Each structure stands twice: as C-alpha cells, then as structure tokens.
Image (cartoon, helix red, strand yellow):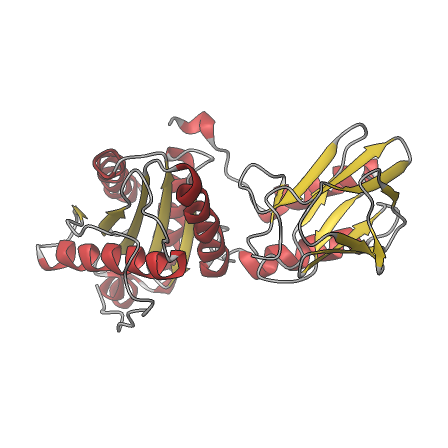
Amino acid sequence: MGNNDRTQSTDATAEMDYGRAQSRREPGLVIITGSSLGEFYSLADGASLIVGRDADCDIVLQRPSVSRRHLRVERNGAQVTAADLNSKNGALVDQQPVPLEGLPLNNGDLIRVGDATLKYLDGQTPEARYHERSYRLATRDALTNLNNRLLFLDALARTLADWNRRGGNVSVALLDLDNFKQINDRFGHEAGDRVLQLLASILTSSLRASDLIARLGGEEFAVAFSDTAPESAAEILTKINRELTQRCQEFTGMPAASFSAGIASLPPAAPQNTDLAALQNALLRSADQAMYQAKDAGRNQVVISTETLTGEEPAVETKREIKPG
C-alpha cells in the first residue's frame, strides 16, 4: 500500500487529462439518471463496455430492473453498436428495442437500460466535457479534491451489493479530526483548511486505489477498505494518524493535529435475505459509535466496533449531532 498505488489528482490535472481525451475525440456513454448523473465512460477503438448490475461490469447500475449483465456497447473504428445480453427487461435506443445481434448508435442516442438512461456521445461535441465537469463538481469535495458524501454512499452501496454476492472482508472507518474547532479559533480557518488538505493528501498517498476515501463534511472523513480485515485497517489508520501529527509539526505555523476513528466490519459471508439498505445504515452507525468511543477514551486513537452486524438490522438511520472536537 505504498505511495505508488494511488496518485493524487487535482482539478488542473483532471482538466489536462480530459483535454488529451478530447483531442483524441473518443466517444463514450454518459449516465443521465440517478446518483451517478454525469459520469462519463470513454470507449477506445476496439474496446467494449458492459452495462449491468454485477460489480464486474464496466458500468455498474445498482437497480432491480437491470440484469447482472444487461448490455454491451462496442466500438470498431467509426462504428459503435449496442447489443442486448439477453437481459430480462431488454434495452431501448430511442424507443427501439436493442437486438442480441446489435444496433448501430448515433450521436445523442438515449439508451434505456431497465429504468436507467444513458446517452451516447460520439466525441465530436463538447457535451461530454460538460457532463464530466458537472459530475466532478457534484461528487468531489472542492477543498480536498476527495469524493464527497454523495459519491461515498453510492459507492458503498455497490460494495455491499458485491459483498452480498461474493462475501469477503469489508471494513468501513469514520475519522474525525480532534479539537478542530480550537485549531480554527486559535490559528484561523486557513490553518484549519491546510490540516484538512494535509490529511486528505496522506490518506490518498497511503491507501490503495481500490479503497474509497471521502470527506463527508466539516472535519469528518470516511474510508471504505476493500478486502481488508478491521484489525489491518486499524493498523493502517494508526500509522496515518502518526504521520499526520509529524507532518503538521514540520510546517511553520501549522498546529499539531490528530484524529479519532471508528471501524465497523461485516461478516465474511452474507446471510440470506440481507436488507442492504438497512445494513449500510447499521454499518455507518456502528463505525460512528466506535469513533465516539475513541473520542471519549481520550482522542487520537482508533477503535474497532465489537458489534456483530447480521444484515437483519432495521432500516432506521441514526441521526446525531456532530460534537466539536
């Protein structure tokens, strides 16, 4: 999990990378419904995109009306075709049923997959860039360039759906900077912003690309670890916490900082008839309670929840008031 496993991106880098993609004028699909609204998937020559509910698909649509492998979109030179993959509910291109043998796509075609809608763009217009920028603004935190709450919850739901089918280790951590209000009051909001950005940078460089990192708001962050036991996740976060304190002390005028974190995890195998929405709420609630145990125990530490989550928790989201520090 070294620094080379993930590279930190900035808006400037994203714009530059997108500019290169635009110069190649690659076609692609953009999602125009749901929480992934505006997400753009480019289509290289000779490549294909599989759309479906399965986590292995290139475009994952977690909707009951979408089959596990629903649709294939394939590019060969200037021609792009869509083919149904024997899905239960079929697919439509501008109200025309998509056959198994494929249907040519034209710029601007609307593709109906279950109750989700995608749009095909041929790369000859600036519309793809508009959609991508809109998606980035809707799902990225402007200060830290991390994912925001909306994207984190959406991605976590996909992770739980995959766990429900395959099992495995899923650990979720909630982090809250200690005494952050005092940092802002004593050193100013600019110093507070630098601490937030520093923690985001350390998280980004320390974790894997498969680990989802987000700033939920204020001084609270979240990490969804892929295929990681809670004990391993706790070791990783403890090292990150030490690095945060050390790095803060290296900067003139930067206050020493630390965080408290709580970790919750799921059993290796999902029970039958798991209510994933209720389970997601319970997982976050359990991590939240563990985080406050870390606060109550003196801060600057990581606590693993001892709660056993079964997937049978009631679908009630616990609401709490964020306490300072």
